[in-house]
Length: 279
Image 1 (cartoon, one colour):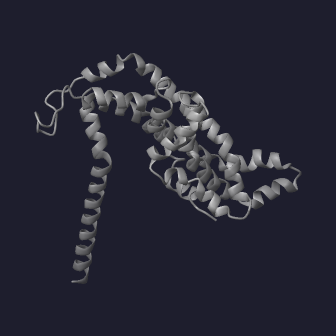
Image 2 (cartoon, rainbow, N blue to C red):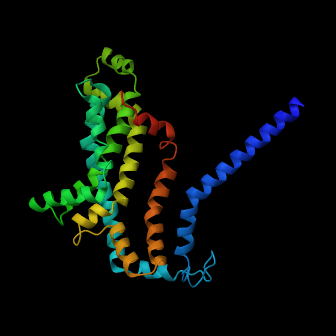
Image 3 (cartoon, rainbow, N blue to C red):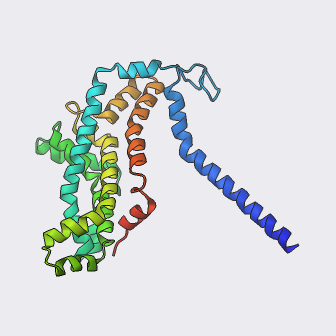
């Protein structure tokens, strides 16, 4: 009887696990599959076609989107801005991340927590306030203005995650290098930086993707001189059916999937958890 009860309990547990996993997969992959379906539909209108699947699949809207004159320029601009922002954020935030990991100073948790403030408030309200300052400084419609707007959303990734990576490097490894005559710079270059590189790489990936997906700030500060993929996608969604917007959404999500697939062994839960610890 005890064995039968144990088998029944295990069966119930596995059934619940299967249900929870199915719900998670539906919640996580459902919207993505819906976007893919709409992107390859000839026409999708739920009022006229109440069925789940479109009646006709085609590449009509792909041809339309890819024929837009500003598409190639917006793709190139998005990659260029994301690359510059990643490099700039790396140069600006990496010293701060190292200081958070290695130096004890007053109000250290507060200053590290302050890098979350840009993500703690509604973005549009924050961007409007920044736009007023940018207008006075003549940064509206400039690349520098777009750079700083994108940089604002990447501070959290490029400080918290590398700080956790530097913290995971044991101090005795650095001390051993110093004992054999290495200078502080040599110790950092040959010991600390290589060991912390996976966490820094994770931060760079998330910074790049955050910049690629930034839309509201670029729309407010960069337009009309600088239109990235998300900004152009907004215009397509407003002026054309949802199928065209879905095509742009698929184009925009491709870099995310490719980068996370390439760096999946670095962008794991351990690296993220290590980066979001305050000591």
